[in-house]
Image 1 (cartoon, rainbow, N blue to C red):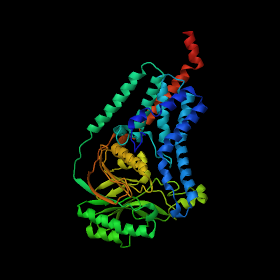
Image 2: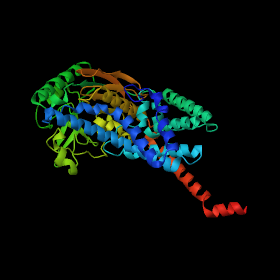
Image 3: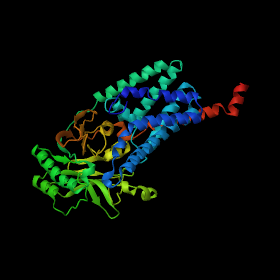
Image 4: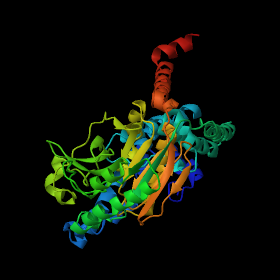
Length: 485
């Protein structure tokens, strides 16, 4: 309930207390089982939108196998998250709870932050505790060290609540101070955002609303050729400087030498277009965002780096089993992680689909000159739960980088997000929408942009020192010296 769409962010401060309590009274094995159960509840309920994959009859899968596949993917993803919480519970019961309150707190916070950082480099990453604070909670703390800052605060409060319930001396004072300090710091960061300077940039966005089950058919492609040039012309008439389309707006291979309705519209208007489509290379195909200049020529491209497992690529060891789940007959290739996306107005950060969940993906582009963020996604056939979670990720990325973010999706939710994290405009779902927004290019650097996730190494260093101190204190030499004195 702390996650979008409910966004009861304050509930995150007590949501892990039952699990932390169990770690103090159960053996490591039973604590791990409790952690798995907690994870299946949290991640399972948060990923229910995966069920919307069913029915897959549009790619030739019968209703019953389709139902089993959607539930199987949901169970697999939920279990992957549950392994995180189960590992944390096992390590806490084995090493963390036998220590004094400060060290137990350090163990709990550091372990969870470290596990989340590790999981965030897997192809299945989506839910972080930091997402519980977006879009209305303590999102501003991400300016310090990214998602780790927010996760650390959430875990610290949960730990202090647990210790206070166990009547640890002085803990309630620390709990009040931590909560008050985090809320105050969040407010200070929000109020201290530097005002926009320089020339404004008018960006138009199109929400095409062509369902996935239709967009890959001849009728869906016909609608794309018709609706996107129409939306583009309407936005040009509103005086925008550029137009942004969703991920895979044109779900076919782009032929740069071919004169088509989109290039014809761009050449007539002379306004650049950011087009979500596919391009071919020697090894296969890329999911791509193209910059078409005023002449309809390719100015730059960004190839999607984090591909969706099973949906956009099949591991070799699974290819014989689930090849039919792929919506493309050819092999999609990941893009170069070190891409720079140039535009006529300077470099931009690009996030395609669930790349919004990977803070290190946006940070690398910010370090290399990204002045605003373009986020594109499909989001169909998933329900509003997924749409709001995706929007929550984009709010975090906008705040961490102190950048304006324009988000264009196929079925919703499309949005314009200010560097403060405020959602300036939000579309309705499942509608064809065009919208023109005024944003500004920014070159500021937050602590996270400049130094990355510096908090996690600090926590790991403090934890290592605590372990070393404990070993020295309990070593035979130290015990003999203490007895002699």
